Image (cartoon, rainbow, N blue to C red; front, side, top):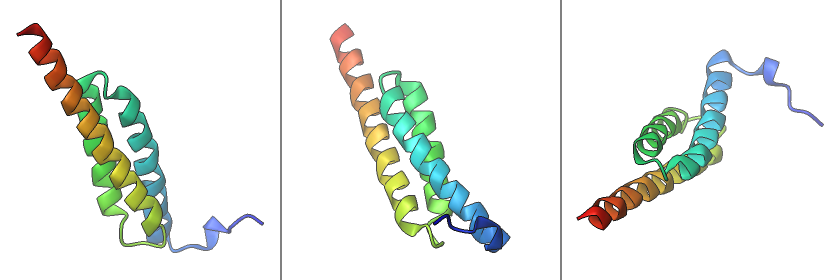
Amino acid sequence: MEPDYTGLDPDERYKKYMAIASVSLGVISLFTGLIPICGVITSFIAFGLGLASRRSESRKTAIVGILLSILGFMIAVTYAFLEYFKKV
């Protein structure tokens, strides 16, 4: 049975979409972490969307997006440090 998204409050629907976008960008940031600047940018965007959508019915989805973005950020920073020290 499909949920009826058209019956939601417009603000609640917007926050639900932001939570889904946060998770999507969090997953993308895991893979783009190998290009550190791209990983950091996508992580920050995903983190911001997750924080903005935390106070909604999609709270768990937003928290997963926040955690994935933090993990993607850590991968990007770690990879950047490893590449920097490999050259030194």
